[in-house]
Image (tube, rainbow, N blue to C red; front, side, top):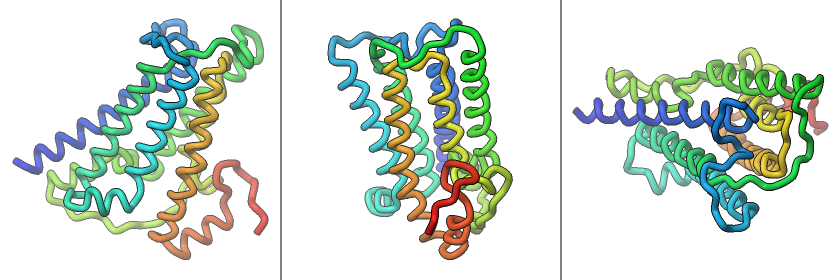
Amino acid sequence: MKKYLLFLYTLVGYLLSLVTLSFLILWVYPWEFMPYTIDKSIIVLEYNPLIIDLLLLVLFGVQHSVMARAFFKNNLLSKLSDTFKSATYCIASALCLVAIVYFWQPIDGYLWKFEDGVMFWIFTTLYVLGWSFAFISTFLIDHFELFGLHQGYRVLKNLPEPPLKFQVRYFYKFVRHPIQLGTLIGLVATPSMSYGHLLLSIGMLIYVLIGLYFEEKDLLKTFGQEYLEYKKTTPMLIPFIHSRR
């Protein structure tokens, strides 16, 4: 019975992640069919929108960074199974995204706004390509493992944990973190860059850079010299640009 409940828990985490991420992708673009977007709030709060939005970004960054770190998983959650930890991380991340979408407050003014013409279609094309790039990249490293579903399936079927294997495929030959690259492109590539949208984009960029710093330290501990060589030859986020050592 326990393994069925654990699998159900991972399935809930996976579906919540899929739904919230899909809504977020639509939410950051000015689609006419969307009743609420980043520039059309769900709920209006009578407080400074800048402070509210900054607090939401801090909540997102702290949850993602702290819960992903080894000290949190191995100390505070040491008595729980890795499968439960993965599903809990996915559920907590989804709830943070729900909070951002529900409580985000628009900030008046636009850095740029194109309603038609060449620039409108350039930004729209980049938006589609960016999110598609990020989505495809999740499957290149195991989409269902990334969102905790494979872990639950192995528990359900009494399958052993597969050995960790470092491999570089397709997009990962050009950048070390294509998921984050695609996400940043999808966030920034909008024909209507309001100041609220700009704040979200800057906040996510800062989070990504900080998060990748700690993630790469964990990857070096896990894969050692193999990852170090990969790091020397492959740029972090911008293709074909190598840091001079």
